[in-house]
Image (cartoon, rainbow, N blue to C red; front, side):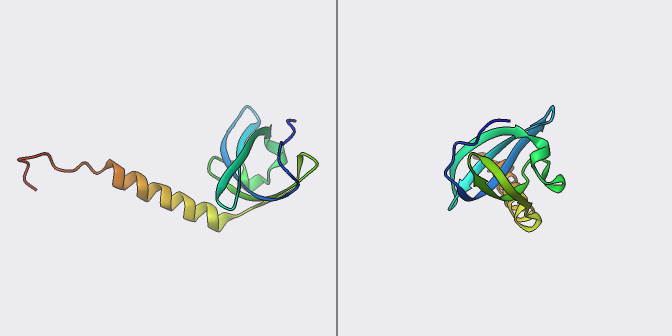
Length: 99
C-alpha cells in the first residue's frame, strides 16, 4: 500500500477510479485539492468503492485511519457535474440558424 503524503488530519477524499483492486483517490481540504494516492480498494468502505464516491477520511501516520462514505455529498456532486456537462453540451445556434 502506498503511503499518503499528507499531514495528519481530516480530509475529503474523492475516488477517481478503481481498477484491478486499486483505487486512485484525490484528497481535498477546504475545497482545494491537496494530494492524491493509489490505494488498495479494500481500504475504502464497501459503498464508497466506485468512481466519484465522496469519503470523509482521517489520515494518521501516512495512512487512512477512518473512512466514511458520504452518500448525500456524492449524489449532490454527481448531479452538479451532470448539470455542468448538460450546459456545456448545448451548442449555441450558429449565425443564421432559426430555433
